[in-house]
Amino acid sequence: MDLIRFETVAARDVALVVLEELTHAASVRAWLLESIGLETESTTILEASDSLGGPESAEFDATRRWSALEVGLETADERVRLVLTIGTGPAVDTDVDALESIRTRRDRSLEGDWDDCRLVSIAPKSALETGTTDTELPADATISLESFRDRFAARDGDRDEYRTALVQAAIDRGRRSASADGPPSFVAEYRALVRERDPAFDLEAENEDADTVADDDTAVAIDAPPLADDHRLVHALTDGTVDLRIPGAAVHLRAFAARYATAIPPATDLLTDGDALVLRLLVPVIDFDSSEDDDALDGDATAIDEAAVDETLTALRDLLTVSERVADRSS
Picture 1 (tube, rainbow, N blue to C red):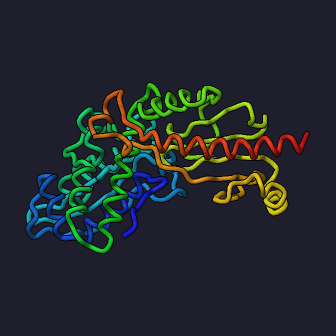
Picture 2 (picture 1 turned 90 degrees about the vertical axis):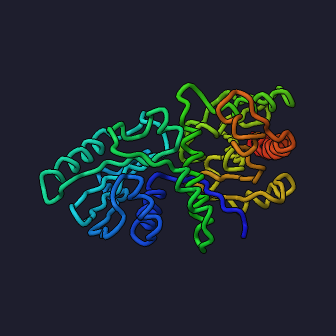
């Protein structure tokens, strides 16, 4: 099977996988209930729902970094309400109104038809260990995303490779978001390698347009002398793409492709985004997996594949050539 990669992943994606497993996989349900401290024998799920709803809901987390499930259980002795919060990053972007809604649900459960209400925090192991989960609520139990990943990886079902990759992507997103002081260390090393190879490249400018590239701190804007003033060149390291964005050219896509056919690299994808034309080249992914071992993720030193950087620089230079040709023809 081809390697599964996720360009973006949200906490709600993980929440829906957890909901599916909880309601349809008896072994996962028994393991999860045991982790929470509930009996696994003679336990019936009465109801289960994605409690924050979709984007149309006022409680939906627009940052995509946390979600919540509500599950009603009946054991031999009691009726228990579970509130499971699923997070992929630190608490800085948590929606206060949504958290208050969870508190209200918990209190209402205890006042209503439920004998007990348990709050369970599901997040990357690093967030659970440091106490920086997205909910900032005192949890009755915690379960790491890594434990879900490992259970999926150990199975041999048709969709288990997909589930494993999805949860791993959520863990990686949490790692990228964990540092509030700046970009991940591998981004700093990437910048240093680029400057070492070509001092003309300026990688200081951060991406400010979330509509054009991935909205995270692993996308860097590139500037170099051939780049036209109104063009934008961005390398999304973890997506494995470099984009040249040319405003106002979308309506002229076919004419543009014909006019600059000799300058545009053969592997270029021509995309439109509003009135802008985007020239995209695929390059090697530069991510945490580029490190020699997992220990490098928590330190300052990583081991980026320098051949991948060289290949990326070639793609950047090719797109800079296109930008320069467009600017010359427009002048």
